[in-house]
Image 1: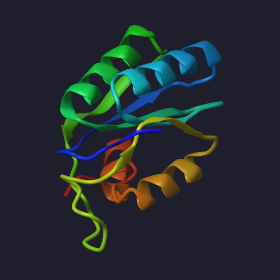
Image 2: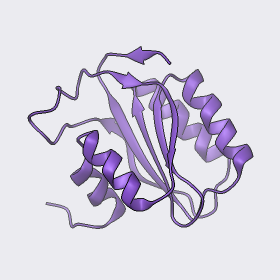
Image 3: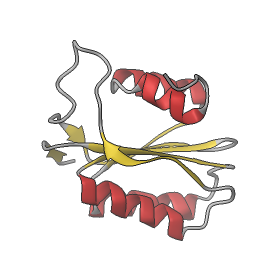
Length: 133
């Protein structure tokens, strides 16, 4: 697994569900090709996808997801500059990002990863769990 260090962007996608292993394999391949970190909540409803990496990589990975024509596809947070929420974490604009696709089975598990990555409040706003400031 390679790592990248440069200005980071991220995006959030919500779908009805993520169950097709063939589509997940395509997303894994795209994550490697575009050198992004991708996280999926798969196996049921709702399907959640998070992507982080360089601007072009995030844009290309999101386009790959769109081409797979997921049911009820929503790009809830368009690709944009990553903003770190916790001051004790490394500066978000430049941080190591593991390249590849990772999966969790629960929304709680997804939330835990978002917290560890320092984007929990951003994720909650994108998912509609909290109102905009």
